[in-house]
Length: 360
View 1 (cartoon, helix red, strand yellow):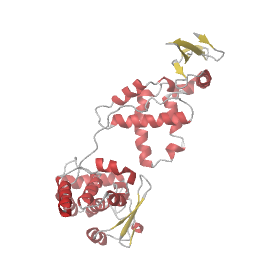
View 2: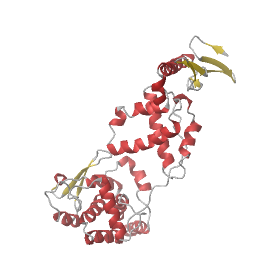
View 3: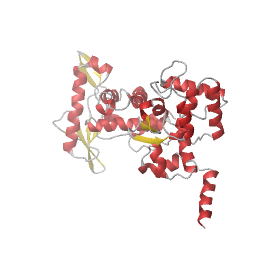
View 4: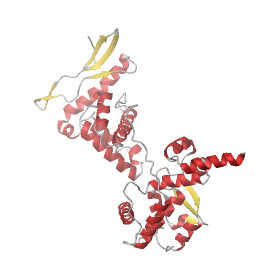
């Protein structure tokens, strides 16, 4: 074993290779008391194996250690150099604060889960097996493991950018993803929901369904649509998720529905109960009320109308570029759209055969 002038930096020879480690003492005197060290030994310079890199990493870890020794009370809240410390820095950074509000809420939920499992773990001590185990703790939820893995990867990539870590234990984890939703609304179900919405005094929900079916836009963009975005028989959306502008010509059936709505209202969709534009929760509740009244189960959701719109366009002979022009997907995502948003069905297969026969 070799030692260096740099505190707690040691060298070991294993398998003919020189490996460098940061090994602090197990106990330190802090405030006149002997306190267990919260930092575990860490292998350094994993990628290059160079002593210069090991010294640089050891310097940084020594800084975290000294900060802990000089501010034990603050360290009890968020110990410097831990996962919680990285989370606290990430949520203050522009790469997080520049995200849209809904994305921030989703991220905060996943960060809270990571904090509950790993908050006091020193950054350099988290192994890939640890990261994988945390993701798999949520195996009962088919979508949660991949979401936690994705959030952990984003968090540790931020850590690499601020030079707090040298490796990302969440990178390329083989966490199985839940199968994408393949639910598509049958036209008879759509018609039943729209009819019931009008019957129970919620024509705004019927209009929302038609907007989603004809434009393929997300519920947030439909809910926030204002009248100044409807001009010359066209609706213009700026998609909140991607900031992409999409312009869609309104079909006659939708135009007729819009003619019955007050143009002086602040939005196309006005909640009948409040007389104001829908909030996210109000819209979800009213939509579910209508579905339950129409006998439609929770297995069909409003977001499935976006997929239904894509399938409907494909069934009517639109090619992928035309579909993207309406829904706002990127052309480079064409393959993904075909795999995720276009469930194969008999009608599409029949259309393909018809095209072949017509060419003969």
